[in-house]
Length: 511
Length: 113
Image (cartoon, rainbow over all chains, first blue to last red; front, top):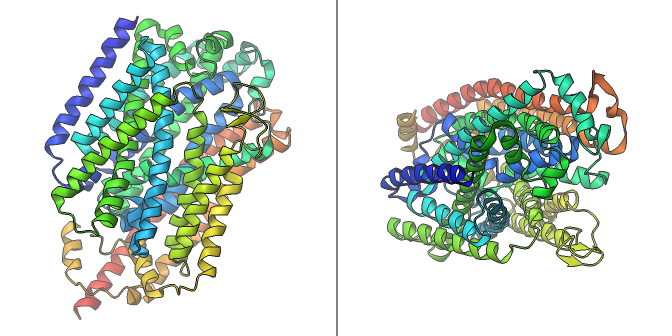
């Protein structure tokens, strides 16, 4: 069994390295490195967004959560999808029109200030690193389960591969790895869903009726409230899900890979279709696992339910389907971490090095070298942190990334585009308050503190009761931006705002 | 398209305030704002209605069609809503693009005059 899975892993590794080889030939300038020279079509970028976004946490995690907790797992599916309306309506087009390589470019287009750029880059790096550690720790555990490889080797393999894609192939290779992964993931999910549905005679009612008796939850399986018991926490989670996506740096940089705002819009629409279909199918994955693998076996393989989808594949299609789904999960991790490395590295190299340290005076060659070294640096740092965090439960890092993105990035993006009065002080206070309030609330919350030894990182009573800080930190981010603006003596530059307004809405004069 | 943009950028002195105050731009902002504000408000309310209803009441737990409860129907409706608002936005955006093109033309003529 491991032999077959190993073989498929090797095929995926070979395929992605071939992509990287061809991409490396056309990665000579910074624009090619950061944005694939903005040459992607709407379809390509739509698939790449989907490939960048549907992480192992959503593929394996949601399937497992639905299998174990029923309806509540589906909340994630809904939130992850509806979030794209925020991306489509508010963020995608202005971002393409104002930005060049990073999110900080967009804010710097209005506030030409080093401090603003620096803080925006800091947020990008913080979010990317949290997200990446979670992905790498998950990857290590997963490959260990699937292939029997040791955790350390698993993390090293994934880490080295992602470094190769980004350093040699830049955004072109990263995008194509994401496109290939999105297609593989859709094919795999589709096949399993059809088999599951066939087992229920293609009858939804039969499926819903049968899962009522399939799990220890009984009829409660189909009702909300098995996992999310605290109403405020549930709403807080949903807030972070729906508002966080539009602030995730690795999603935002995907809009620089297309040539103009209409193409950016089209790519979000395509991504929304692909992601939506995928998340509908998570019901079949979850219900199928509950019915054909069974609660005990899922929990025995992994208490969080992460093995539900691969085990379902094995139960339905034997070793080949298991190996295929495992290989898809592997490709998923590679695609997502490559996108994360690129977003953190561009913040380091483009924002900190080129703009702040070199004041925009670095030559094209120096910028390329900086971008590549930054990618290597980010990779090494994340690999080390992931090795160190092996024994920790890092699932909270993903929710932290969403909370920081929603609290620190989204308010600034929205106010930069829409508020005439907004100024530098407001932007800086908003970003810092959003970042640190989310961090502190998580640090004092139940993800870090639990009276039960082993349930969280530290033993003790949490000072803050909610696992998800969004309901407090998101309003704080907005309020701090507004209060910071109103309290500072700076006058807003109305002419500059009109320029941004025109540029953001018409795309006139993007460089 | 690309050629058009380039020739446009040659007019290095773009008066953004003038464009911002032009009737076509004002019209663009008005129809965009109307659509985006109302649609965003709608989907936020629709989206949060689900967790609020499931957290604070059991109303959605009763069966709607066969064994499928209202909670699941509401959940599926979120998908339909997302796709529908995507299609709607694409349709409206075609109109936005037309006005943007008009603004570009006007700015070009204004700049060369």
